[in-house]
Image (cartoon, rainbow, N blue to C red; front, side, top):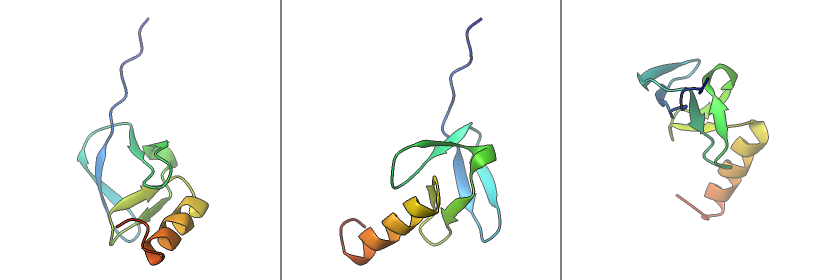
Length: 71
């Protein structure tokens, strides 16, 4: 039996939750590019509307922005 292909979701991140704009199974970590299953998503930035695989990835992203590496 062939498993259905997974699809990237499009979300709107809010302070304590997120809403689904386009259905999918995962989002991509802005820092690492890793797929994050929606049921495991715990870290995001509301202002930048970005998801992160873990707290370390979030911190690395913040530091890179402070150093002007990427916008």
